[in-house]
Length: 495
Image 1 (cartoon, one colour):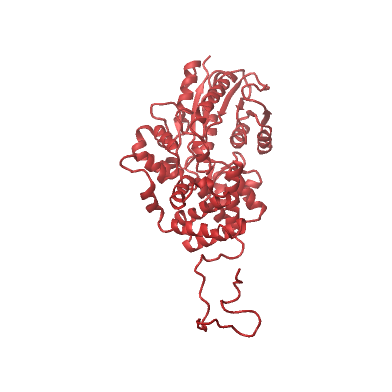
Image 2 (cartoon, rainbow, N blue to C red):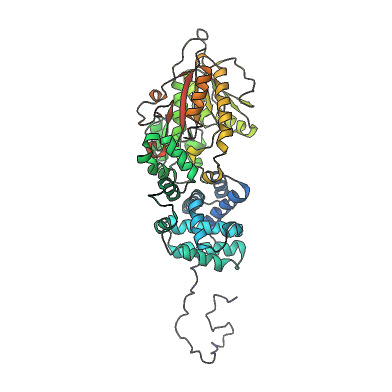
């Protein structure tokens, strides 16, 4: 291998250059290499992004848990942390589109490529098509990343593939590879916005009559990097104060919400470290508020403090909000989670609040109260409403997952109604817009129990276009409300 510090035709002996027959001696500077530009030695941002993609591919890891840990362990911050986040999350989010482009540039099935090479190609294609990084830097950095992880042998292949990718921009690749917009508008939008077709169908069905006008915007918003939302702990700090301390903006819908306007690790913010605020999407804050606001009927005894129950509490975000609101109202909250490690997270999050944490299956766990005034059932779901925050999830979930989950959701909601007193209220929530997980679950349980459906939209005044058309509850959307696509419905037990 040629030492790059020695010009072609030179040597280290100090006796001057040696001429070869028929080749004139060059007196000018050596020509630059025709290969990709080498980035500065060491590339912590891209290395962290590549390791995140590997963990997602090999271990079914969650990118939004893996990358922050890597950044902390490697002490990566500032611009490097921001770059790593953009690249890792972006490549996970757009994997289907990136693989379609790579499939057009590679002469073999992608699943036959070495895993590190495939991860690097996805990372490089993301940079070429979906960032403002110059093409020569994107290609050069990716080639050097492969060289450092897999040796020199695959670098020529990676260089050639990425140069083919870079011959066109994203719009040109979409024009070539996406389904025809006139013949298959749904498939076209799904491809353009990097969604599996079945998820685009779910969004269309959930939007109902508004789908024709809004589906493009809904998928686009779901494909964008979301802002970080904070929730000020009620009774401890106001949203105005939290916004002033963090440099964020007060949220438009939640009286406790703040939207951060700059990047960085929100866990390093002083109010978060001190427990005055938590990282929580504004949509989740609105669910907790609806649960605390619904009108109760009847009375279980004069002067008795209210009893609240969070049946699926882990990892504790809504339990913190409910617990703080319960403290203001003089109520007590019982919080349940099946997994011991998640229950431990809840225990830590609600420290100092009137919350008792229990570990066990929500449908079977023994609780200290015979009946509750308010119950929140934040049911396990497909998570289709938070795909922008869980970038790899859209390619991991399958349409077949829904049926098993809806059975669990109905069971949990029925259990919630059994644990609430007559006249008490159950709030059902999912981080999904899928009709099978939302309105259909609620309708089935209401038909079976005779529970009274409440006007959930009235509990969140000022929130526009949230009521489900011809259905129970409210459905939030990233493109309408800037929140995750949370669903929420409130029911009152009547007997």
